[in-house]
Length: 409
Image (tube, rainbow, N blue to C red; front, side):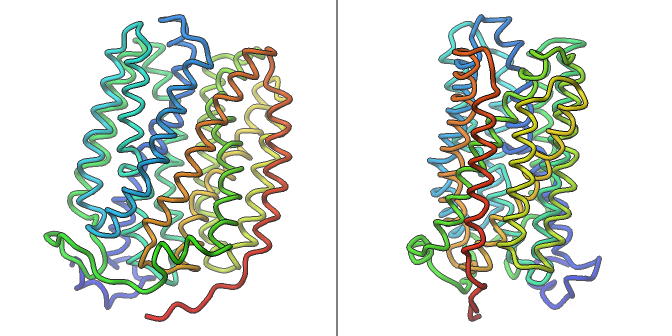
């Protein structure tokens, strides 16, 4: 059963075709930019420093380039998704992404090669992440949309939990070049076969080159509302905070006497709790007003970032990572959910892409500023405290969001 033949099924039915789309998307997200590249980046900071003598700020600039390029390219990718559907965008983007990650094994002392590869990874990044998959999922679900989006984002959580430790293991037993090759191959294995088979919009066929018309606002109409900009503002602050903390997590903890293995395990804890955050947030979104759920998630993330500023052992690092993971997991499901509820599906992917522009700009600046703070002062504490406080204050903006409007079919 595929495409339009499945539309009469009940979303609560295990055999509903939409759940197959969710499973395929889950594995695709696990091997995509937001999971495989972002969460393993921290594992390679010290090896690249030792190999080439690049300082932490210089290495963080590579992450910033990828993040900024994701932000710039996301509206275009969103527009292509709205026009052609997800499958025709995901497959080529995932192919380029996986090969680019593997090619990092060929790095030489000239840092421009690292930056150029990060640029290419960012260019296709959101075509190999939940921006692309969320389009398909949102066409399959209404009553269970929060749960479905959350389960897709579980893939990112599983990747965050498994991939840093796996990359560290390969790095320890072999070297960082082999670790990059393994990650690139894994991205292709997870992203291509299931996406080819199952990623299709509801009511569409796998041979269609265009997608059906959906209800809701155009992206231009949505972008002119204050609702959209509240969502963007909260996401912006959240991105600076979370990406800064996640990118420097391993380096911060090892500076304070935590072993590299324990630091990688803390990153895995973050990934594990992000899975719980995704599932829990999805369950809450299907039952409670999304703005209040978003407020609660922001406070949890802020607490984790504040505690990380003062974490000096494995236990402190684990608790901090766990709270940040819950917040990271929850935020990933909240944004697409709120966009569909307030604006419908007509311009969904383009609006989602625009939010990613701001998310990526913030995500690029957080790690670089945090790296500069360390290089200048030898400490991460002050900036992390500022980030935690800023995110807590931004979370209150969610309470200004109105009730969901009625979107006519």
